[in-house]
Length: 620
Image (cartoon, rainbow, N blue to C red; front, side, top):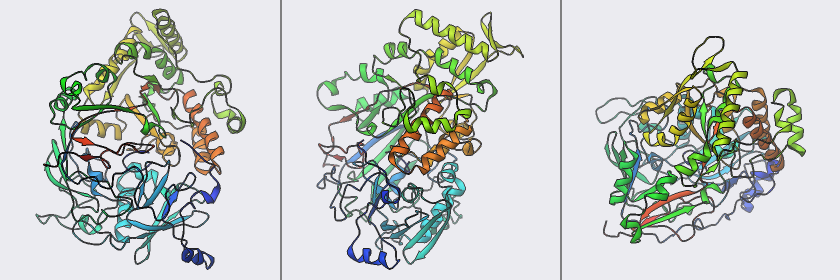
């Protein structure tokens, strides 16, 4: 839900008290009695803030970590843009280190956020607005102060030029300066517990820089792509750029926020560089050779079979499989049929595709048993539905009984399970039967439309050739029943642009869910986002029951109610077969050369890479 990374133990959510987690001073408490703002040092949407107002550092950092060395990272594809606002172009890796946000999250908490650019935050009991008081010491890299005008400019720019943020922040009606260092966001709905928190998440940009001119005297334009290195208020600045192939960042000695408790022990690498690779295997070889320091491995087969080289055996490379990031993150990874295409409009067609998909064989032959089948849009968390609906969840679904598939009430969702040739044949026959019900039949060696005689044919758009290995078995299974499915891998820039404009038949999609679902659900599944280019409604979902459930999630008065509604939404999404669920490992698999180090205890819900890591190479 935050800009960049998406972040169990729970307590009850209780109406307006949920966000009132920040401790306040006696002076501020006295102000509240006179009707003046109650200023808080942080916010928590779920439960209470874990850290006291006078905390000295985050509990999982090493405050004595050296500020030295260079971290060499890799990225796949290319980049052609350094403007984080717009939906065009491929944004350069690492640009998030340039820009601070109003608030900053702790990865030891499900949804705790503390002041960064803002030293304090205030909101009324009905949460119809939120006011941030900026720190007087907050500065841009050119020495200019961060002002309310910068915050206003940033929000207006994101809402105007970013499809995702225009939807995500659609309830923000106005942003205005309400004091010398104060800025207030006003909302068009009340008692939305999430809104005061999420408006602290977006990157703040320098208005004076974007409205100024570049070195050649040309007027800058925030609505367009750029490869000019922008200035920010964050810990790093861009040291050099090789368009399309590499970016190098340098730690700012004059970073205004380096001594803040929320930042202590972080941003420890003197330089961070990103090298782009067009091929995943070449990228892996660069890591093996030691020219790349760190790797997050997303291939189970590579993890199982290709880390047997000398540097691993000699202990020069450490491998770790960590569950931390998934303790509070639900994942749906799936083939996503675009229902804006006629071929996928019938739910029976989409259900049939799931019967064709042979996860068990893929897991055995390609992943060496290292994967698990996803069976929920909130997989791996308490938000995932299971069994049949009961209690509050059943009451909610009964209110929508005429708008949801009947099977929601009678059949727990399960994916087809293969594992032997007989089951595969049975499931292919089931798929053929579903296709027939939807108006398709197998004639000879082709699946054709019974009315038009047109063969079923579609393209699976991929962002990398490295994905083809896991998609090819699905394509082969489809061909067994006469469906002409094709893979097409394109460069990252073309892929991003096609996905943003919904120019695809099917993609390989991933959604990550926080433990506090909210406004982003509309961007994922809501009818309001189905035609908004750049939204994450990749499947093209426009369903009245889904819309009603999303609204209930956003306004749920207690944690118990929220969980019940999310379970109901999960069931409805699954029962409509909007996607073909794939797999996930449930682990973050990382490998790194021993010149890198991290604290012995990582945060509960993440690994904070590279923020809290450091270099052991003092020579650089």
